[in-house]
Each structure stands twice: as structure tokens, then as C-alpha cells.
Length: 578
Image (cartoon, rainbow, N blue to C red; front, top):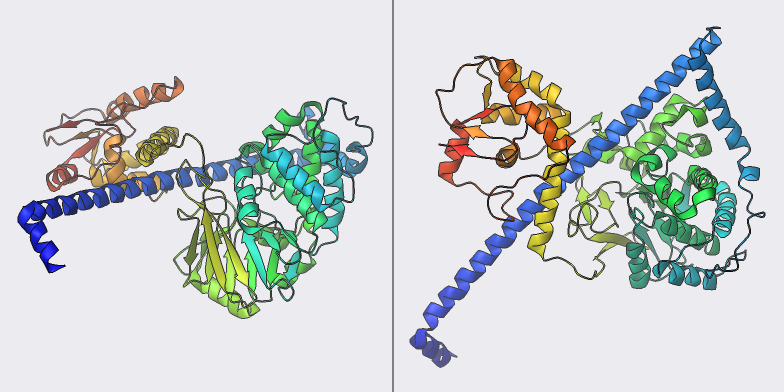
């Protein structure tokens, strides 16, 4: 060995070793930069998603207030055609709910002779489930008659289930918890391939958000419902925040149904919504693991949740179906489906617009009060597919791979043995024509910056006000530090604004900037951006492809810290003036 080393050194081996070490260092730095850029793009996408949910909830709350005003006007005898029309809409919705079983009758729907898909017979068998898997994996659709018949059957099954299901592993010795699937059929089929189909020895808990966003939400939901009918003691589906008719209107599930079932789509949508309203709210495994889609809150009461009528909360946002609801029940159901953990003690309002942010102290009190060891949730997309928080007392599991963009995250599921020991399995389906990692991140950054610019442009009024307060000298400019502070205070995205600034705003380092009217100075930079987004122009990029989020050297950083940002909104292309 010593002789070989000496020979290698004498023949120029030292130079080769140094070259190898240099290449390794370069590659590690390259991968580290890619990972940092990936995490920034992922965070931008995630914050914009939460903001979109918040905007949708606020819009629905506005319509609910309008309905309430209309009810008061009609009740007071006001002669208002608008109020009367609102009442007609509300009465029609309630009447449709009462007549749902007869209105969605499937017996009169004929199956065309040209239909070559599965022809279901009830009760379902394991063979028919396998037939559905084969049919869906090849891009096939189930006929509307069998869709509605399957939904009617699973509705009857779900009505017999409690709000919180108690699951025991005394027979199976294991249980698998699957997180959000969001209509990604390929992920569900890969889980079944790796972990096996459900049966009494291989039970599953699907932790909500089975629909929306993905292109196969119908097939994912139907396949899970079919499994539940065949193996009722081995398949448990918790309700998620996306099992809600108001959310489905925004995030693609309703649109998918209308596209696939055309004339019968309205009946299929209403029947799906009815089934979703009967999904249980949580599952307890071996009296020690609490599985819920969103999270908990400070005053969460499991006894109250056990007794409430969950079907009454058809939607957490629509007045037309909720009727007379108990406010405490309504809030606690919302906390179960919408809450997220965070690092600070106590409870805070969530940026999603529903639920809360619960701290480690709330988790510890909840687990101790109910004698649980672990809280398992989904609802968020960790960049690694799963994550532990609150001193490993909270496990977030997410099963939709590549959720934000291609390469953004693997999917994951967790298996618990009879002692409650978790085994986390990560996966990512193999796709054809997959892009190289650098190209994936480049495309993700491009999409993230587009969305971020649009969000900034939509908040221009608030940003103008924030920058005006900071511009005490009335120069029409602010420092980079002030710019970062204002962006965070208005948008509340918790982003590395100093790193993103070169791609959003022009920086001038002159100290002798001309005095001008602040309103004119701000307006000059707002108008081009408004036109940029109104005509759908592409984002102009700086530097080489892939250099979206560069690391600035010491000299550049000093210039950024001493410079002043002119205007308040993204410029058409970043530039520096020395």
C-alpha cells in the first residue's frame, strides 16, 4: 500500500488528488447553491398558496355577509328585489340538499354499448378494485352511472362511522398513514405498489386532501372509496380542508368533474360534496397517536367533537348549508382542518385565513391531557416529504410528490408498528423526459418570480403607503433595509428579500439623487409594472440562465447596504448604477 502511494505521488499523483479535491469542493458548492435556490422558490410558492387561500376565504366571507344583509332586509319587510333574489338562491340550495337522494338517482342513467370500462356490481370485491386500478392507470374513466352508484354506497357506509375513529393494531400489528394526495393518482398507485393493497393485516389511514390541484382527483377519490367499501375495517379517510365545496370551486376539483362528466357533472359534484361532509374528522391509533389533517388549538375538546353532527358542517364557509350552527363547534372543526404548528408558544392567527398557528406548549398540553404520545398531521408540504416539530411531538406527513414544481419534494408515508414506532418511507415516481436538476430549479424560480411580481403589483397601494411613511426626506427613494422591511410588513411572506431584491427592483447607489415629487416618482415606476402584468409579458431575467438567486460577494453586499431603492414595485429588469 505504501509502495503504491509513493508511486502515485512520484508520477504526478499529487496534482491529480488536488484536482479531484477541487472538483469535489466545486460540486458540493454547486449542489448547496441549487438547494438554497430550490428552498427559496419553494418558500415563495408556499406563501403565495397560503395567500391565495386567505383571499378565497375573505371573498367567501364577504358573500356570506351580503347574504346575511339580504336576510335582514327581507325579514324587515324591505322592498328589495336584490334581497329577495338572495333568499331565492339560499332556499334553492337548501331544497336541493333535501332532494339530493332522488335528484342524483343513477338507475335511469343508461350505459352506452360503446363503454369499455369497468361495470361495477355491488357489493364490490377486491377483484373489481384491481380492475379499477388497471383502468385508471391507463387513463380510463368510470362511467357516470357507476360513479354515482359508488358514491351513494360509500355515503351510506360513512354515515355509520363516528366523528373520531378509534383504530387498533392488535390484529394487523401495523398501520400506514398517508398524507395529502391532491389528485395525484401516480403517487397513490406507487404507494399501493410499494406497501400493498389494504386488507385486515395492512390497514391505511388517508389523512385528507385527496382531491384538488392534481388532474386525477376523481379517480383518486373513487379508488379510495372503493377500497373503503371492500375493506371497511382497513381503510379510514379523514376529512381535509379541501374536502369542501367552496375550496373545490377554486382549486380544480369541480372543473375536473365538469370536464369529465359534462351534462351530469352538477349531480356528480353535489354527490361528492355530500360524501365529503360525512368523512370522519380524525383517527386515534391505539389510544396513543392522534391523526388529523390540520392540527389542534388551545381549547380543542375531543368530547365535543365526538358528539357534534359533522354533516351539518357541509362547508365551513357557506351559510346556505350550515343553517343554525354552534359557533364553538364550527371553530373547532375549522381548527382541526386548517391549523398549522409554529415555533412560538401560544396561538396566533393563521395566514391562511382559517384555523390557527399552535405552539409547542399547546401541543404538549393537548398530548398530556389526552394521554397521547404523538400528533400526526398533513396540510403542509415539507421540502423533504415529512418533518418533525415541537420536540418531535408533531409529525407532518405529505404524500403528493413534486407538489409545488418538478423536483420540489418527494412524497412520504409513515408506518407504525404495534408499539407506535414510526418508519417513514419516501418516494418519487419515475417520469419520462425528466429535466436535469439545474433546469428544474431554473423553471421553478421563473414561475416563483412571476407569481411574486404579480402579488407585489396587486399590493401596490399598500406598498406605496408603506414607502411614503419611510421616505421622510421626500426623495421618492428608500434604503434597501427599508425596502425589505416594508415588503415583509405588507406581504408577510417571510422571504429573504435582500437576496430577492435584484430581481424585483432597481438599486441606485448615488447619494445625490434629485429631489422630486414623491407621488410622481412612485407613479413612474408603478405604471410600467401594471402594464407588464396586464399584457402578460414575460419576466426579463438578469445574467446567465440559472443565476436567479445569486450569492453576492462582500463588495456587492456593501453596495446593496449603502444603496437606495428607487420606486416601490418590480422593475422590468434589474440593473445597478455605480
